[in-house]
Image (cartoon, rainbow, N blue to C red; front, top):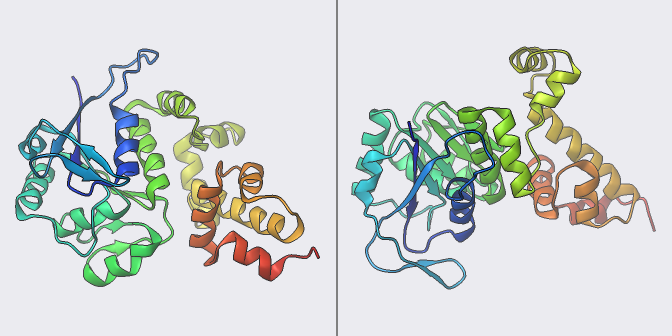
Length: 281
């Protein structure tokens, strides 16, 4: 049976987050051995929708398309301080009640929070909005350092780039690690390393996760990110490598990803850290 993914489009649309969603679910993937998702976009408002960067988006399908979605993606939100319209809130509540999966990227978590579906559950968002989310919705257990949080049928991601990791995680949940890694390779994104770590440890992925968390208090990907940031700190202190060069060396892929994880874990930017702690003259 086909699995319908519906992305929400709205005026002042977050272009990057929306683009990530389209890239993951809308492209035909004849190279895969599985039937791919059925993808559609629905509009919150009528008429051309403005998007970041001076772009206009025209969407044919109305909001009621959410009623038939198996997975709904909220690709950011135009203003965390703006409450989403009541009809959208009601449709998300109904979708969750009937068993749909709800996902948000970055500031999109405020839409799910307004719907009340995150109450009593863990969630994350961009570091700029963590305090605002926790203050406005005290019943949500906000995870400030998580790349993304999976609560079964509710998934939330941190910043924009983290949304891509969360969407790849969805693919892995639906189709397995092999398919997810094939998609990651086409995106030229780093595949999830859990299967590789489990193979090296001669364990199943489930056993590795259990034993790793019991030994370190961290999930494998959290430990790996922490180690990469620690290595980045060392390189910032002792070399003149660029941010991109360091990101490549430590396995974070891009300078943007390095800055994102570095700020979340160290509380400052790589550049500020280098100016304070560099051992080179």
